[in-house]
Image (cartoon, rainbow, N blue to C red; front, side):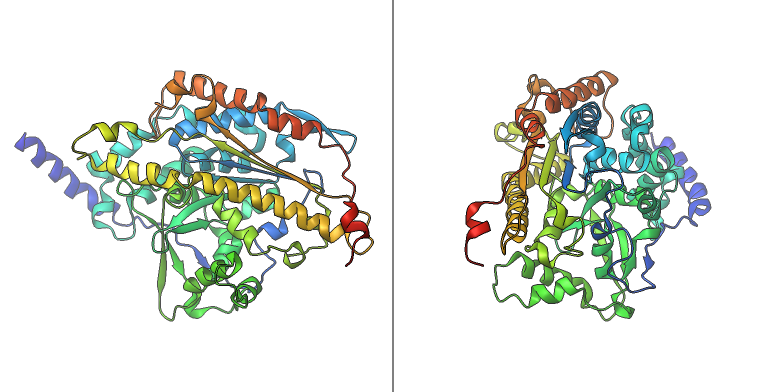
Length: 467
């Protein structure tokens, strides 16, 4: 045994000098100061979708279990048609925004880049790949130990390289911007603040950085950076030498006197990034630590514009919305119930899993309620804007639909599939079928689509009441 270890050490010493040149691609500084350019929601066009219908789909964390369940949900949306404005529409092609965290970031980012090619290639490129073997190789193969001695290369930088090679092939956010909708939000967690960090230009404005040149694979790696197992993905904060001033939404939020205002809270968090006078960094870990439903990043953005009249381009597409649909595709498993039957929990990864899954998942109910409230407030505010002062409407309507793996028939067997980056082909089949069936059978979604073409008149109280 000692001889084997000596041989491995010798191989490592021989291999490391050749790898020392590895360096993770850094984020670029923002050269041109602008609140309108780049990969941002305010630039969301309607090239593929109806102007007055907003569809948001989120994919939860949960490793490949969640990714396969989400992939199945996408196949159902691809085959789901409905009538809207007198025209037959395809639900998947009406999706405006995809959000993903951890395992859910894979189908979200892959579809945003490859579109319908996902149905031909995603299984081979990702679902059937043994990525746990790649992870093991990082720790067990000496020629992949550069991360031990190289400060510019970590274990998750190595995974970003793997994801790029297998799925994203050098794609950057500039490529996504050129493709147009759906807009994708890959969400990580800022280790220092414990807050959701969504990859969108409005977030990169805070660190005076250009998202357009950033590789999509590195964003996905950041979202999947399970603590302890993977090192953080690091971003440079260029605010110590930045030509861009304070974003207008931050100034407006700080002026709000309500200490419990969500706008103010978001502005105070933003100030933490902007108040630096020396080189500073953002360390990103698994997005599920802050929010395993992949909704907080978008909801935080929405909270900056509680009143649609304050949002970017309120007279544009936002002002036209009459239907707002949020769909949460949740492939998470149940909490680890066996911990209560174990006298001593000594497994470090099991403890980390309990912290990032059991504890964080306890907030999912509040996140879902917040999403429902946000969608409802958007619809009510838009109705009020259009229907007061003699307006003729139409009014707006919203729905928040949660589709969870644990609610499906046979869930007891499916939820026991481990959270990881390798699952068997049979389990891929079962999870994909479960995701597809869950969307097809969801009564609330079917009802919303069936009633989508019904006009909503302005409420009499708004149309005739005092201004």
